[in-house]
Every structure is written in structure tokens, then in C-alpha cells.
Amino acid sequence: MVDLFALALSHALLALAAWRLVLRDDLDADREAGRATGRRKPGTGPGDG
Amino acid sequence: MVDLALFLFAMGLLALSLRRPFLAVLAYLYVDIVAPQKISWHLLASIPISLITFLAAFGLWLVADDKRDSRFTLRQGLLVALLAYCGATTLTADFPVEAAEKWAWVWKALLFAIFLPLTLRTRLRIEAASLFMVLSAASIIITGGIKTAVSGGGYGALRFFVQDNTGLYEGSIISCVAVAIIPLILWLARYGTIYPRGPLVRLFAMALIFACLLIPVGTQARTGLLCIGLLGVLTLRTVRHRFLYVGGAAVLALAAVPFLPESFTKRMDTIGNHQADQSASTRLAVWAWTWDYVKDHPLGGGFDAYRSNRLVIETRSAETSGSTTDIETSTVTDQARAYHSSYFEMLGEQGWPGLLLWLWLHLSGLWQMERLRSRWRKRALAETAAGGDGGASQWQAPLANALQQAQLVYLLGAGFVGIAFQPFILMLIGLQCGLWSYLNRIEQPAGAALAARQSAPVNRGAAALP
Image (cartoon, rainbow over all chains, first blue to last red; front, side, top):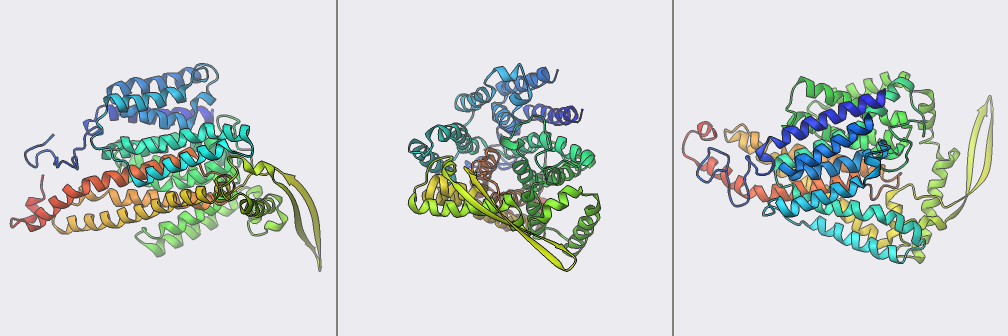
């Protein structure tokens, strides 16, 4: 019973995290810092994205 | 039912990785830590799930992921050197069959630690890897924590999902890892964006930390208690109200003693009285043997070289009754005793070159995290002073600090447990390499932006707005 609870809770949290990650574009390209080539925060200037 | 659920979960992760290749890396982290194929008895147990997830992680990265921001760091080079050296000692090992068995999992763990940083090229990926490592370990820690709270556990008696003494399912190892990840849990609860800061996240984090602290009680691994002590001291460095913290910790520790199982307090008493304890005396004897062994084999004897030891151990126990003290001496003969210390494990198995490489790998990690912590702390303060909210530079220093604390806790635990190549710790090293590489890469543009902001003649508060 305890094992089942621990497995269910941790796996539910892992699954939800995975789903949330799939929906986020900043998983593959940073919004915050940009690449070394100088990408900036969205809305801070030309060359966004 | 559990079998099917675990199978669907693993397959689901792999399916999602077709949309986002990085999910396959997370799937590998999960499979390697939880080992669902050991919990399952049919579906996952019948397929090489670890190999499949590794191939998916590496293959998808190779084919579908952007590699322009991937950097190869010095510490990954050290891991490559360690891998090559271990490969060489395996070929000339004292016990070729046993050495090959250990090599079979060590090379995979080292290879993944070399590969992981190449994929950690965004902030979210670093957070996601930390979260998956913590939640995967949590599946074992939650069950251990609840069982300890209910029944008290016992040395070697606390049963996790499987009756297995490998990976994180071994008592001393899970004790050390459970304490080591506490700083990471705190970081995720505070700076996480996948599960953003909030009352529910805080509640879960607190409950998980409590479970982590219960693991050394449940497994009665003395190493865990030492790790908790060290973490308590390390926390003093960052905690805001030190006196309050010390007072609170002392009160909590005193209040916890009556609730601890008697077998636990008895076992912990033997930390100071190691002569009466055979396990501790054996340890000292093995370490002395290893020291002598490397005098003749400075390049190491390959994995499992300890198998050739034969030890004669004298234990002494004193029993006082009234005014008389009886000292009882007994001699025990033992052989093929494991190292019970990662430092001696490295020394005996990989000799001086292996030990030095391993120490270099760890000490450079502590140094790198210290540099990141100090640099990004200053940057966060400077950004706040310049009128910004410092939001973009808030999370870096605390993460470097958490990874450093985790490593220090491990390095203490490693003194008493042979976990030099523990895959979870190698993942932690991969995470450090990824963070170091990522922050160094973004530092230039971020620094330039800050300088521009500071020298701007306009209202600074307004200039900081996006």
C-alpha cells in the first residue's frame, strides 16, 4: 500500500512535469538569456526569437 | 497493474520525446534512478529499457537537437580520462571476471555523465534534469520515509520496492543521496518554474525533506547521520537568521530523540566506540590493507581488487558493572571485505592515477560551483542595485550553492561507503558541468546588457522594464 502510494505520487508528478515541459518552447531555446550569439529577452529589441 | 502502469509511463516518456528530444534524456535519468524494470516483473523486465532509453536520448540528440550551444568542458575531459583509465585497469585486473561485471555498469554511468552536459543548454533543461533526479529518487525516499515513520525500520531491514542491494536501493547509499538532494529540493521549491513556487509545492518539499531525514533513521546507516550533521553546518553559510537557525535545529534535534527507535540510538552510539564494533574495525583493517596493497600496485588492481584481502581483526568491548569493568577481546578473521570508502575504493582499484583523477574531478566541481555562486550573487545584487528586479540573475547562485552542498555531503558519505562511481552522483557531476558551461556561455551577453543598463542616462527603473 505504501509502495503503491509512493509510486503513484512520484510518477504522477513526473508525468505532469513531462507534459508541462512538452508545452514549453523555452525547453529548447532560452527565452531568458539567449544564445552566445546575442539573442535577447523577447521584446527587448530586434533579433528576438 | 503496477507492471502495466510503469510500462505505459516509460513508453509515454519516450513518445513525448518524439516531440521534444530532451524528454528522452529525462527518461534515461528516471530509468537509471528508479530502475522500474526491477519493480516490474513482466513487461519492463522483459525489455532492455535502460539501453532503449539511452539509445533514444543519444540518437534523438544526434539527429534532432540543436548542438550549436553544446560545449565540451574540462571536467567532461576528466571523465573521459577516468573512463579510459578504468577500461585499462579492467583489462589487467586481479579478478578479471568480477572486474568485468563492475565495468559493465561503470562505463555506462561515466558515458552518460559525459553526455548529459551536452544536452543541458537552456535554463529549463537544467531545472528539468534536477527535478527528474529529485522526483525519481523521491519515489524510493517517500516509501522509505513512510515505512520508517510507521515501523521504525532497522539496519538492513527497511524494504523499498524491491529486495535489492544495488543502486539507490542499498541502505547506506540511499541515506547519503537522500541527504545530499535536500539542497536541490529547496532550490526547486524556491526557483522552480515547472512547478512554480506556491503553498502546495512548499508543502510537498517540506514533506519530502522530512522523508529524506527519516531515511538514515530507517536504514540505521551511521553515514546518513554524519551527512545530516554536515548539511546542518553547511546551511549556516546561507541561512538568513543564524542564531535562530542554530537554536531551532538544537530544539528540533532534542525533541526528535525520544521518537527515535532504540535500535537506532544504540547503533549511532557505536560511531564514537568503533573498537567494539566489528563493522567499523573491519573498515579500518581494510583501509590499512589497501594502503599496503597500493605500495606494491601503485596503478591499482582493477575493479573488485579487494577480493584478495584477508584480515585479522581484534575487537574490544568494555562492560562496566558497579566498580568493575570487564574488557572482552575477541579476534575475528575476515576476507574479501569491500572497501567501505570511495577514497580507498579508488586507491585500491584504480591506484594513484585513478584516485587523483577522481579527486580532481570532485575538487574542481567544488571550485567551479564556488566561483559561479560568488559571481552570480554579485550579479544579482548589482542588477537589483541598478534598478532591476534582479529576477534574471536570482536562481544561478543558489543552484550552484545547492550542487556544491550536495557534493560536499556526498564526499563525506563517500568516506564510509564505496560509491565512487554511483550513477546518481555522476549525474550530479553532469549537472554541474552543464550549469558551468551554460552560465559561462550566457555570461557575456548578460554582462554586456547589464553594463549598458548601468551606463544608460535614462531613468534606471524604467530602463530595466522589458
